[in-house]
Length: 232
Image 1 (cartoon, one colour):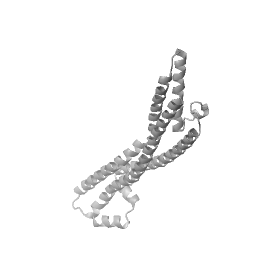
Image 2: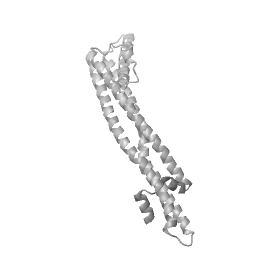
Image 3: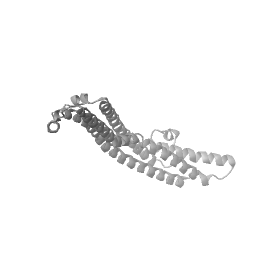
Image 4: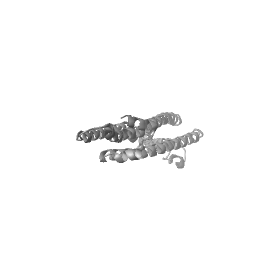
């Protein structure tokens, strides 16, 4: 065991050689963890870029909306920018508002009472839809963070069990015969940690940014509802 320890500490252990010494179960688990790592990094980078882009689009739309004197009479080109979360909320609210007004006009009743109610309901539906959009892919990252160490532990337990089982059938057992199997088993634990640790930091950073953006989205919806009430 001292040779294994010194090899790991001094950095002389060759991961490729250790991987090749793993049995089929260990190789499968290590390969799966490698695939999960690639997917997790791609999701984290893509999610960060997506959230940053959406935040910039939201701020641009908010500035444009603040410059308008009346939001109820904006052109359809502004309402139709549904790729922008703020614009999606705005478009849903305005459409619901004028739809309620049209129905009231057809029935010959005063629709001023329920125009705002319809607009607020539309805002809530659009808000829920955009929150799901913000939180997409986060479940996979959370699963990687919690599941990767357990997958690595499973591979280690299996590898150690296999190593001791192979030693038990020999007449004599020594550290030289046991160390290769144990080192191969420990490779899966290292792989699991190398996948989980970056994913954990990435998940927490993305979660914090997502929560901030959801709060901004809720504040925008509230401010828009107030503005519609003042203009109606």
